[in-house]
Image (cartoon, rainbow, N blue to C red):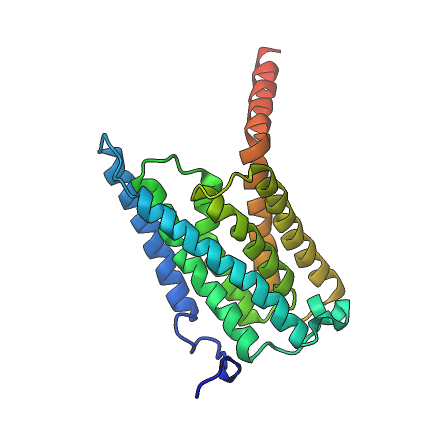
Length: 249
């Protein structure tokens, strides 16, 4: 009988993990997103997908809670908590059940494409940060998986914990807006912090995968700050005002 610990991840050969597929699916997602937005712009009324949206949010929330629990249980089983170095910097390449969990986590980022489609069909405004995050997250997870970055545990745990609260929140199960602000900021700090830490101290994994992850987390942080504090918009207004003042003088 097959057991999760029998799973062996083979970069580029395990289904849906080649860079060619990643490139295709990201372009396909972008085209579908644009097409849906054009279609919905021509419609006066939204397409009622709220029930589907609610069930989808609930399922992602449940999946995220299970992932959060399993990530910690399997990390403990594999002695990842024995030392800081083994937890986030130097550890054997994950295999078996933990590798399967990481692989399914990557697939879940493709599942989340449905989230943005439903939002568009519901004629809900799509924030640029939300759009960019969904467009690029699969690449961050897959590149980290292919490059065997060593700090996958904190990023996986922070993301699954955030989604455990966030998706039920959007499904109307509870109102935890303040908790989401804290968890969202914590996820970004963890992603940025561990990406920089790994590069400084020379943690295991592909250098290029670490650079890609760091660059994406920087863009996510900019989007988060602009969404909640409008920093980019304020900077744009400041620059515009400064240019106008210089022209007048």
